[in-house]
Structures are given as structure tokens and as C-alpha cells.
Amino acid sequence: MERKEEEEEDIVCLDESFFINDNYQLTTFTFGSQVIQLFCLHSASTDFDLTGQLVWPGAMLLNDYLSKNDEMLQGCSAIELGSGVGITGILCSRFCRDFVLTDHNDEVLKILKKNVELHASSENPNDCAGLVAEKLEWGNSDQINQILQKYSGGFDLVLGADIYIHKFFFLPLHF
Image (cartoon, rainbow, N blue to C red; front, side, top):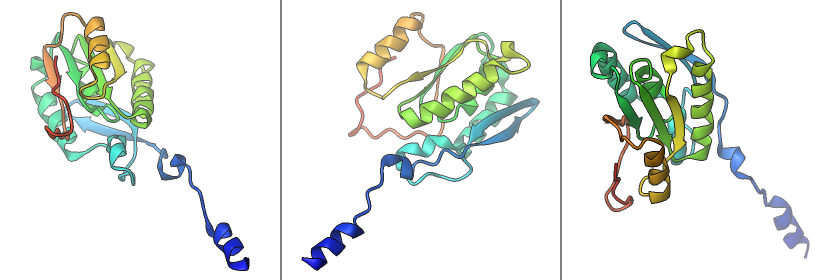
């Protein structure tokens, strides 16, 4: 009987917040003449599903390319899949007419929306006109249809950096 009581005392229950790191730091990034500040982590979370909390090398490369070729973005309507903290969308929104950032993870969406608000309330809010964040789980037809209803003209450009689609896990995307 005494051993059973000891075993019960050894059980530790952790809720999901134990595994979530939301110690975001305001970080400055420069791409050509464009300077972007946003909140992000500087190291990966323990959960593979929270990789969107930091800026990955693919996004840095994509933003470098886009900053050198910003004429391709002028006046476009664009959507980004797997936006994470929003670094690409925030850069593109300075040139695009409309830019929709998407992510599927609720925790990542919190920081994404915080970064959108940060830029909407910045010194030059016109720099980020038409910038919005939406939840999008790939293959979720209800969420896809909601986005397409709001943007009935569709998108001129679909972007994604550091994303991976395995045909066995996700239904096809239809835009």
C-alpha cells in the first residue's frame, strides 16, 4: 500500500502550455531598403507544429529576392501559405494591393496577428494597407471557401517559403 501512494505522488501532469514558448523578441530584419520589425522566437519550439514562431532561412532568401524584384509585386493581390510570424507578407504588403497571410496553428496565428497589428499601427500604416491574417488548414474546404468569398477575384500570386506538402497527408489545395 505504501508503494502505491509513492507512485501516485510521482505523477506529474503538464498542460500543453508547458511546451509552448511565447517569449517573443522584437527583431529587426533588413531586405534592401526595407526594414521590418516583428516579434518572433530565435530558436525552435519543442513542438514540430510550432515551427512558424521563428523566421527560417527560406523566408530570408525569398524576402531578399522579392526586395530586389519588388516591381513584380506592384498592385498584386497575393496570399501566403504557412506565413508563420509574417515576415514575407509584411514585406510584400508594402508593394501589393492586398496580401493575405495564412497559417493553420492557433498559437502561431496569435503572433502572426500581433505582428500584423504592429505594422498596421506603425508610423506608416499605408505601407501595410490590405494586410490581413486568416486561419487556413490545407485541405479545409470551409476555410478555403471563406477566404475565396472575401477575395472573390482570387490572387495574382501564391507564395510559400519553408513549407512542405506531402501528398499523403493533405488534400489538394484549390485556389
